[in-house]
Length: 603
Image 1 (cartoon, one colour):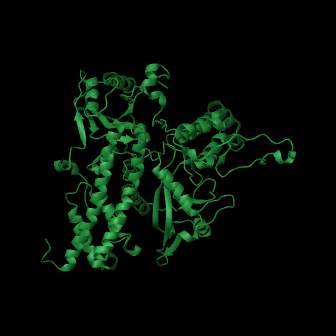
Image 2 (cartoon, rainbow, N blue to C red):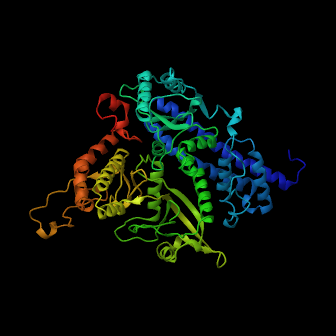
Image 3 (cartoon, one colour):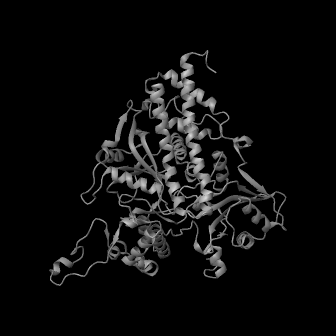
């Protein structure tokens, strides 16, 4: 095509083509893993499903490294003049005109080139600071595969049969226990919650064409449109006790969808020929959820990072408040700050820690990576990890800058002219902001709100039990390390002492030896040997249950968490290969419980 073109132009085209080939290889492998999730679900290969989820996280960085190496080896890309890079970007845009994932390919371009170019070029025309290719209406190209969603037109007479058909259309190779029964449960639950079905002129059910897989579940995701009313819908499909499939419940509110696609849960496996179309559809179900979080929820966490950073830059241009030290108890290993008008916190690993913290920066990074790869079961906040974050120095409170220089000097670089300086942060974690639980309990106690204290305490215990089911021991279980979300869920967010449950040794506190001095047995005294992985649940009480209302509620609902045998039992079950169920909805909503009468339908 460019035989007669100048050599620089041809070289630029070959580089652009190599970049796109690197991305296409990534998305092909990513999609193959997602498509295989259906077969793993049909075969009840739960550990294989989790393994695929963990391995998929590494795909992107592997392809970035491969492509960077290719550009350096074949094109000496680190020595190219900027004129060539300008042409590379323009030619790359041309290659994306009919592409199914242009926004992801642009992010891949950025990921590779920023590992080659100097940082001074990161904010100019050599990378995609904002999207160059529109993602609107990409799905109309039939060559890319089936349409994003299927449409059903139920009538009063076919209302239940429509639910049967839309589930059958996913062609799962495992029989259902009783799909007609389950569809009847769906219809009855919707009628109980939303009222009798009365189809209007524009009545349809739109269902995304591919299932969403995570752990032991598959989810049908869509919406009911009935006249001017729109209702989000998700049907969790599980393996019943018989080994056959069941519809476990029906989710039908925006809050339900936000819990299902929460930043505190593992990324879904879902085959998306046109991911932007899936994200657009999901945003109609969850309009308050940022696009960045939806991209992350469907396994495209690098695109989520890119979208988040664009949102942050946009917010900084349209706000004037300053970054500050985050409210709450200051961490011993993390410096945490936030921007009051922006619902996230920024966490930096300190350069040094108290003597009681036997850890290193690399060990802390490994803990955060463990959480990203693990099933977060709705109880551990996802983090966005960034390198070389550039933020305007003028937007930082002087107290925060002093704190950063004191504790994180190795991570900081100040650049630019006076009045337009930037602070470059070498490494940062960013998380959704929550109300620290210690502050929530303090405010509730001051207000005499015993109901809120009890509710938070019950949720705290539920959070610990969900982490146990996921093979996670939080390590530091103090209130300050947990937050409360908008929906009232308790979520863990401090990972520097986290361990696999199966790596811990849960012990009873041994009785004191009669020959020992009585002074050795007082509060805070340890008269027995303690190994590095030893945990003594009986000792949790004095640290956690000082508040009388908290203590009363905790002992009523979660006393077993103070019993080493409870922890040891779950450790043994996990070691034997058990994968416990943790549902993204309340267990009383499960149809099996409602049919058995174990839990009232109204909870």
